Image 1 (tube, rainbow, N blue to C red):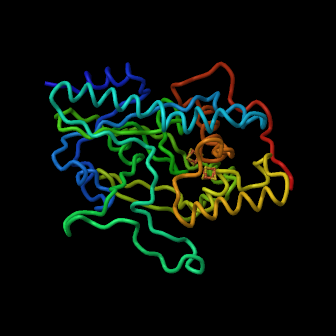
Image 2: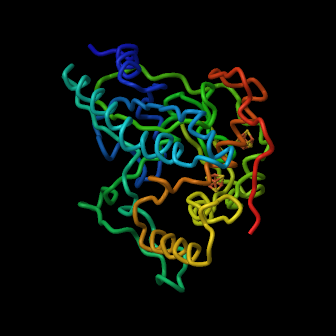
Length: 320
Ligand code: SF4
Ligand code: SF4
């Protein structure tokens, strides 16, 4: 019989920094299109993994001098290299024990279930995504599981106002993945702590002005009400991958800007795979991650501690 501590120990040895287990009933009430029980109806547990983003991967962006480490090691490297390797190994090991294991990486492109089109003038009225259900009782593929909610259900932490998962280990500094299994693993209790104090520094420092300071989203998950600031994803995705002159030193000429705008327009309009990876996450999550991390570290709320504070100089901003 496979136990939760065995799975956690194996996953940590395989490279996960955080491991939590959710029971499937915690997803009761999830929108059909986001309900993991449609992926594996006989699943008895979801194992959720956290992979820390190195604080040092954000250093070069904080100083304004080295932008590659975050896009590479802090983003694409985790999502496309470390995380799949860990999932493969954990799933192989679970299946060696006679239980099925469904890997759920955080690196899929999203077009299958997205609603197409933010601007009706450009792409026509919004229409459903690019797939259809295989039978009337099922959601259209691919079911899109909200991994931050999954992590909440697995007891790893809470969702902060800026909509990132906050954990007592790393605050907002991790990426997530999960495995569905029919192994009857004991679930972890939900996180009972309180990390987010609604300081709204994530709103203040968001270079895309993408997080509303007043409008919020509320959902009920596992009997708890969760609330976060309303995010304008178009604004976020533009700013995050370099749309703001203030935070993109690589945007130097009108041609650069035009090329960038065309690239983002194409990606957003046709819902191409995320444009954040491979050198494009150059805004470095100024608000939702860095400002929040600085704030939580200053309050001594995080277990992953450092000898020196992260923010040692006034944050830079470029003029036009
Ligand atoms: S910056 Fe403040 S309000 Fe925003 S998520 Fe962090 S603690 Fe919450
Ligand atoms: S990634 Fe950047 S632009 Fe997007 S919400 Fe976070 S701080 Fe704002």
